[in-house]
Image 1 (spheres, rainbow, N blue to C red):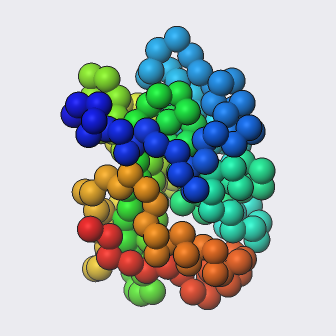
Image 2 (tube, rainbow, N blue to C red):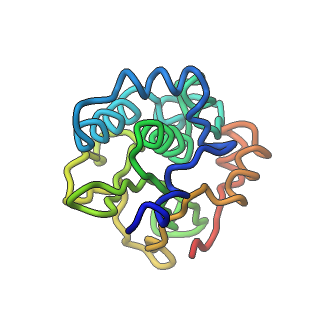
Length: 194
């Protein structure tokens, strides 16, 4: 891809607010001498320092990169928003990928799961999942090997092949409306991403 094609994957936005002072400072702290090391350090930091709200019994539902950083928690979506913001602040093109999964076990309801995608020299687009590890989930940054948190295994589940430059607007609106993890569990966000 040429730089013009990648421009949307380097841009700041309301959700990917990498010009926020705290996000920009963290991006500088995680920067290394080469792209792959910088991308990996950003991934590891978000995976390991931002708690997945359900795993850690948190109730906050941040959405923007700066909100996730300030709260220290978030769903997979907010963690991915922060990771992509850190990449973009360091000049690494980043976007978003989605899976449609069952919420818990083989039966509906379904919900969306989000992950991050980086455009890396020598590899192209590389999907990785900063959701956070726990028993049964082990996500690492190891291009070209992809290791998403969840396999596709039940009817109605799939992984979208589209790489979005911005988070889905419907998702952003839903996160703003639910206001708490407890309410999200009652109303998980289900969507058919392109």
